[in-house]
Amino acid sequence: MNMNFVVPCLMGLESLIADELKELGAEDVRCENARVFFSGDEHILARANICLRHAERVQIVVGTFIAKTFEELFQGTKALPWEDWILKDDEFPIKGGYSRNSALFSISDCQSIIKKAIVERLKEKYKLPWFNETGNKYAIEFSIMKDEVTLTIDTSGAGLHKRGYRLKANDAPIKETLAASLCTLARLRPYHTLYDPMCGSGTILIEGAMKALNIAPGISRTFAAEKFSQIDPKVWAEERTRAQDLINFDFEFHAYGSDIDANAIELAKENARRAGVEKRIDFEVLDLKDWVHKSEKGTVICNPPYGERLLDINAANDLYKLMGQKFQSERGWAYYAISPSEEFEKYFGKKADKRRKLYNGMIKCQVYMYFK
Ligand SMILES: C[S@@+](CC[C@H](N)C(=O)[O-])C[C@H]1O[C@@H](n2cnc3c(N)ncnc32)[C@H](O)[C@@H]1O
Image (cartoon, protein in one colour):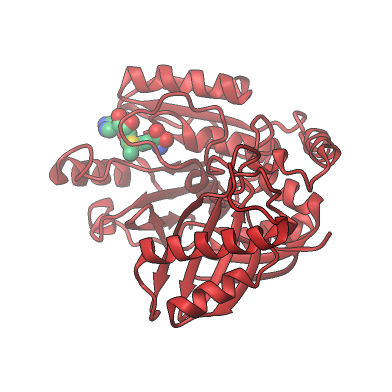
């Protein structure tokens, strides 16, 4: 069964996800702002959920059409083949949506019109007056961009950033998908040594280790579409086996994590253990001012405190200054820091060799890259 899909993502990560999807065998991969479209079969659906490192979720595109009025939204929605997915007992909540540069902008009105239209369609198809919605869950979302409506069914359930290894979070953890993206942008390889001297709960190091050892991020969790009656459970089993077979513990990858906060280090150790990479990461409680290299070459990736969230701005700036002193350009060393501060380079004391704009949730950040 060939299907169209869309993957919503953090802004700035579209091209990384497009590359991942092509590698996974997806077809017709196309990027838009904060989302990537592609097509494929059930195996690609399962593989994308299990393997994508940088994406937020995988949704089936049920249809797209133009709507400038509520009537057009109703008729366009009702015309789509919802019965292909939703059986007569299934639950089909309209989870949410957004509208940009479009005539229809009231999200709650759109939500109830879409629900009504699907109910009407299914009433006619199943010859039923109402639906109990006690069966499998098919969560529907919509987007309206320049009057083009896209209606989707979610296949992921919990967001893909939820890998399953993080039980508790510390004060300001970086999202797993963003941490994985930093490792990809830093071109982390299985033979590299990775450092995060402000590692908090260890997300960057854990994501780095999983990437280096080719551990699929979703290998230990479940997905909403595993309950879909249209998808043979064999597909999921085969894709999990495929992902399992691709794990390679022969790689010599090693990482070092430190943080001034002892509680964060305890949490990081526990998270690494749950992710199955604890043997690849050494953690210690250490102030950045005492940080030293433990290998000849290395890649340092970190997200220092942002000032507005953890420390006051001055303390954050002092830390950027200290980073500049510690992260000296040396053969075999590269440094990557994500920060919302426009003045990062000033305090760091050196212009970055490259910068890349990324969003940490709603916060506009830059990845400052030093590799020369
Ligand atoms: C934004 S958090 C990093 C979050 C981390 N990436 C995670 O996934 O949990 C910044 C971290 O820097 C640490 N930190 C602040 N000042 C430090 C210093 N002088 N030396 C080492 N770590 C420091 C904080 O304890 C905090 O855990």
